[in-house]
Length: 247
Image (spheres, rainbow, N blue to C red):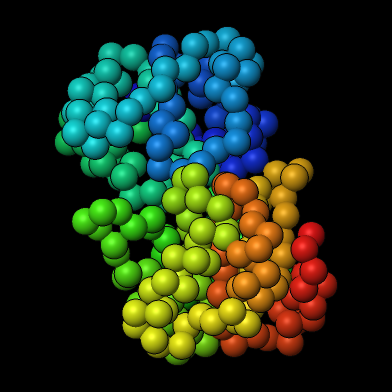
């Protein structure tokens, strides 16, 4: 049996009771922390379940998933994942490989950034396609997330920008501004209002609604997200009025 267990987004205390019970049943417990930021402590969680937690690398889940799944043929294996276990499509590889090898699986869901953004007061029903802002490299400067946000905006939908694992909200805004200078589609300027949020789902969560230039000046640290509001319902608009200043 392979247990695919969500860690949630608020730290080691967010794992569910069902998730803890699965870890106790498991002979070995693994965790991957490369698909999303997670503010918890694996050592503390390991003490709580009474087992050492082995950290997986990207290749263990992607390139060597067959060997990982094979472990579940003769013993219970728990794989811990930041947020909800199926938010990142990477983990579908584990499920598909398990089916191919005839290994049983159990999915234990948890809190996810995709629902925690409701803390901003925006309706989840009014979000368009979610995108990730990627830091440009020497020979790699993707802009598809900008193009998708433009399409969302044209439809009046909100856009959730996930950020690279170590990116703050200021850098995210600056990357969007740089692309705007190239494409000039009117997605962003210094006065365009964004929602910036950090640590959603934790006791230290911060949410603010301000002009892009102000967010650049006063960044929120990762794990963080940006949201570009689309057409606002009056209830959303009323909620955002309380977020104009930094929280």
